Image 1 (tube, rainbow, N blue to C red):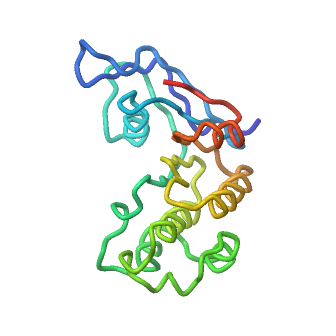
Image 2: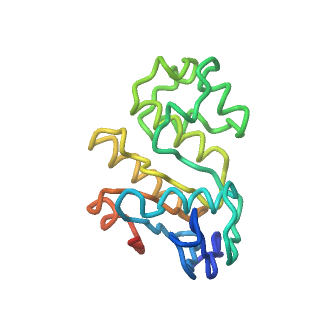
Length: 190
């Protein structure tokens, strides 16, 4: 296995001390792995990503992570409405190689010059994944990365994500148990 890109040790967190979402939770993710988090709504899946990203502070425990990028479940909330897709990708990532990656993802390069509201949900989610990959992370946090895509595009995008495993480790949230079984090295149920 590759280098460790995420190490969570003895994480304890809750929005109140009476009702903890995590108690002494530990997880190690290495480059080359996909670990999927499954669980019902309210079980703390998205909260875990917020903790990893540093947006929330654990009550106890440690989280060490490599440089990361995120793919959000709702792509419309992750893009500014008044800038083109290319402008927004260029703000955070090196866009060299963007044409080849667009081709691999089945994403028309001309869509990069459009504004978010001019794209379908599936197109915008592919743009979100494109942006995340161009940031060259070592850890990719993917919150329902294919939920806005039809089945054929979903398969293509997951195959593309699997091809990136030589350089990243992926922590994914999904409600799709079949997808998790198909692509995951490990599944953590909350």
